[in-house]
Image (cartoon, rainbow, N blue to C red; front, side, top):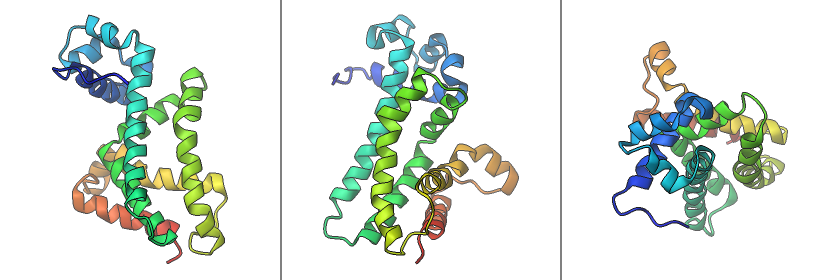
Length: 201
């Protein structure tokens, strides 16, 4: 693992890259724009990441790693808690992460416009572990009658769609409803709504 650069250059590049890849797609986010957004000279992108593809993979990988670490910390801190309470708290944390990092879901949507190597990498290296962890958490509760009886694929997309869509489409939500979905009280309201949708009680 690479150490953070002393002046934060690498981290600024990664943050700018995530924003632009989520806003404009891989093709639309030029290295010139990323460098401008990060406030660095363009050759520094090559110095730190080699090429645009590697920058994309590193930025996306770090975002999924942040999600995995946040959920793992929650699970580790709840040893001995009953499975339903654990699942509800993990779902709540996933909704909050989605509110704070809408780039994650926007990048997935950008890559899903067509099949290709980046999407294949994204699914196998990043999304599949999340999918398997979600089902591992929720399917036993479904069998116990505590989570709604929904086929696995639909359950996963209901969870991820419900958790993220309002934040991915936050500008539309503000214009359409007058609700600012990233306001902390609205995020918590959305947490409650997602849990109510998935859990029987």
